[in-house]
Image (cartoon, rainbow, N blue to C red; front, side):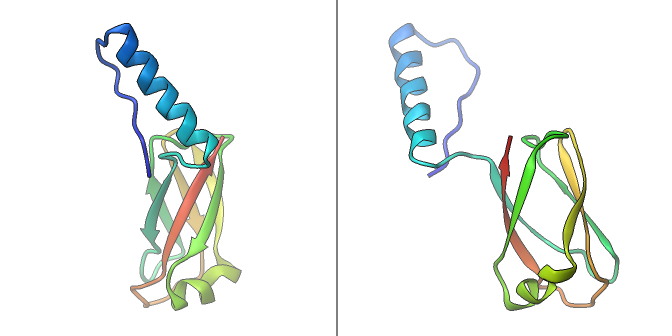
Length: 105
């Protein structure tokens, strides 16, 4: 279950409750630092925009389709910057090379 803290005016008990819930979610291994993408067709790079990515983030990939699993050997994160990352991969006409990802740091 993902969570999100929204900057708004809260009374102190509500703010404490939300922070406690967020800390409990993180302690249980859940965060909102994840997503999904599909590799671009007939090109060798795919850009993924995610505001949670930074230049020092570690992006972990998990294939969610058979064609994505086959593409793992030639797919890697080649660039990270604030708000996005780029993957380099083999050019292919398959439209279902879909991955889930998690961001750490």
